[in-house]
Length: 314
Image 1 (cartoon, rainbow, N blue to C red):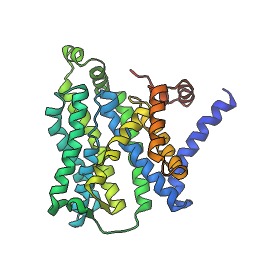
Image 2: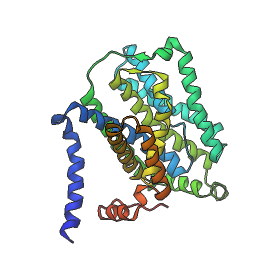
Image 3: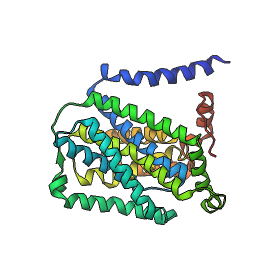
């Protein structure tokens, strides 16, 4: 074995192990940026359970994030501890996912995507109108406090759990059923695959992570409003990150999140007025010249293979 083959995995491992040490020797700005990166990466990773492995482009994934945020925020103001609020957020998101899976998974392709995106706007309007509970357009506030360090660790832990869950699903019987639905749902059903049950299970599993992330987000930010948690950027950015990184691969959403978030911060700092346009150009170029995502580039595949992280698409 060559020295390079030994040093490269070692350097990556040291980098991962160093993340928990960041709060002890980092500026607040760096911690805040990493916390938001973990948030978006967790959303992209959990989105890809349905969007990548199952093959249903769920543009309404952020609905579970908003449900989790409002559940924790409302309960926290009533004196409920954070842990109990997060548990309640997962239950609310799971029940909601189970209920909507029945009508929504009768749709396919673009119709499913449009229906889920419409659900985002519907939830935004409902949240705006239920003022006594959510604060409406004025937003929901909780007791302000500096919670940067615990949120950093919690977001990092959730991201790791989301990646491990994705890897476990890809190697499980459930994952095999999901991939068979992605390839040809009619054939899978003819061969006895319980397609509706598997699709519902996938949506319920994927809903738990954004619910937890939404709860931690409001606990960290201390304030949310409907246009923020159900906004267009919040809804589409995790989807774009997963696709840019390599949808359907466990490592893809993490690569896409790191790339897109890093490019966004770099462009914002250098080209403030052209930020949106230049970021859009980058996304289009990556989509045109790397349609399979970053994780499927030959150079990246070779690197992942050396690190023992290379996956099969099937």
